[in-house]
Image 1: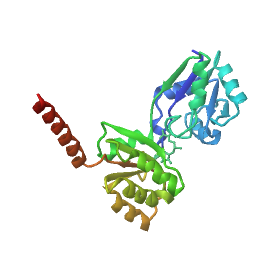
Image 2: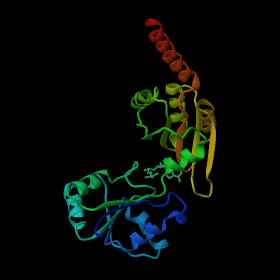
Image 3: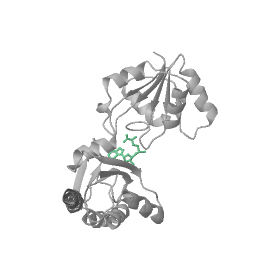
Image 4: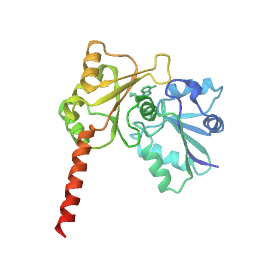
Length: 244
Ligand code: SAM
């Protein structure tokens, strides 16, 4: 069926490419890739030679319109350099325009660093907020962290090695010294997941900035906040009962 196929690719270990993803790549008429050189490596691993075009959400409107036009009678596959397209990666505007044009849009789900990190962290996974990359500037970063402080959910951030310690310190400052996990190089040779209170992790990585790709997971606020809320609920219920 012609249309737009959103295909997740490995986040490190090429063996993680799905059978269905490989099959769709093999019969693609055109692959819209974040970086065609990166995707070329995946295609050569799969023994495929498929036409590619670079795609970014800031690609001009005409390039996007051209892709959407092709989807009418061609299989157009969207991939990013690693993991799930649209997750801190290009694609949202292409999906939006493909939908608006009434094209067939489907997804082949697969690796995603945020989900992989949540599963590794041992932190509550029932509710989490994916926060992507924090802003670079200290003020904007602190403001963004403050927005998350009251949420009763685990928080997931993407980060790079050189910024890791500063980000952990800013999180400790803005959220309190919560439990956290630093998941690094997931599915690769040096995969590791280090857990501890935010301030301790900040100190650890200040001495030795780690290499590779990183996801930070932060636990929800401690239970005493929940208990406070529960007490307030109980008090309110009691007052209401006694008012009768
Ligand atoms: N779309 C991708 C996904 O589904 O995870 C994320 C793309 S984003 C531009 C790249 C960031 O994802 C990296 O800076 C890092 O924070 C995280 N990441 C990607 N691969 C990773 C890995 N193997 N281990 C840990 N973090 C990873």
